[in-house]
Image 1 (cartoon, rainbow, N blue to C red):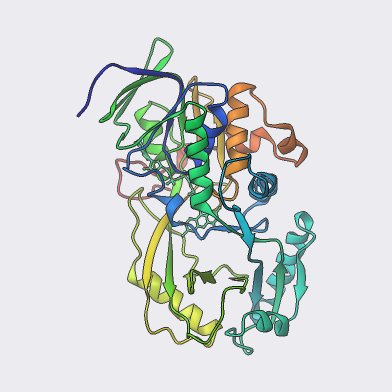
Image 2: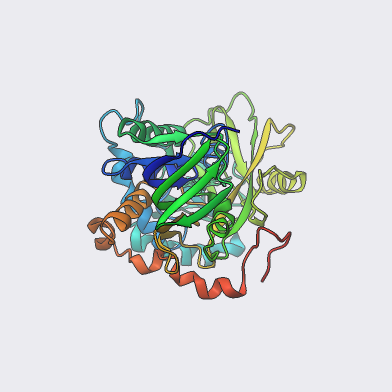
Length: 396
Ligand SMILES: Cc1cc2nc3c(=O)[nH]c(=O)nc-3n(C[C@H](O)[C@H](O)[C@H](O)COP(=O)(O)OP(=O)(O)OC[C@H]3O[C@@H](n4cnc5c(N)ncnc54)[C@H](O)[C@@H]3O)c2cc1C
């Protein structure tokens, strides 16, 4: 273990996933920043395991607004940010069985409030786009034409590279093991040395509550939920490259092209301890069964299966802002299944709440309120329902 002299900064960020990387990128423009990442690579956990989808029609209203607010950055990142476009065409078709048509109507009405380009298409049009869909399965559909494929690696690396160019230090193999508040400063011990700063940002993903507990900050009752994904080969005569993503209106499965194969998820959301998540056979089997029910595919082989954690607050909105009990402790957590597509807006929100104690104007204009992101909204709920890192179960 290296000790060495204490390294100082204005801001320490715990976690080098998309959240920590984005915050570092924004804050390094005006402050000295150190990112502390436990693993040997920053994208090892949720950030490296996502479906890489940009949609403005998934998640609650605040999430949808944050995704809309992120589009400009993703379409036009700063010069030199990424060698390739971060967004490429994909489109998303939400399908419904006969027994789900009422739900489809409700979802369509809700979707069009914020995304008027979403339109109903008939089952034949859905089948024409994705010919493996079963005609006796799909009874109705709607299409989000501007949903995109997101280059997660490009975005994450762009944030990290840009943060470094602005002077930030990214320290890997640096698990935060203890956090002390002394002389109005945070003192943080890791195997890579001791660090000291005025402000601490908790961007630890599934570990955000345990990291808060290390700092003596009341946890928020964040719950990591496991989601499984797997790849299946498709018959060689199918050209799937231009297929849109197919999403079940009841959120029971989704699939899309992924490097010549299909990416499939049973859209599971199993509460989990904060761990290095792995795919369970039963969840993969559920995904195969749902895929085969909706399509003509007969799955012979799974080429790769994995799982990641999507971490939620009780109201499923992200948590961004200063803790209301402990000074200079800032939360950037609870991004659920939406943390990549919303990362440009959430990074700016976090930076702005630290530097000027208000949200950026464009987010306010879109109807996002600081109070609906603030950690304080969850403290009351957390008193009754939280995952304790010392406990094997979800306490409710
Ligand atoms: C299957 C799946 C599909 C998804 N699809 C999408 C999608 O299509 N679009 C979308 O926008 N989002 C999607 N998501 C959600 C998205 O991946 C997450 O919201 C996002 O990655 C969360 O980023 P994060 O930086 O908060 O967490 P992470 O990437 O998990 O980063 C947190 C980091 O903190 C580090 N850490 C924890 N404790 C410590 C400590 N004590 N010391 C130092 N470091 C520590 C961890 O090692 C980790 O690297 C999906 C997620 C999954 C699992």
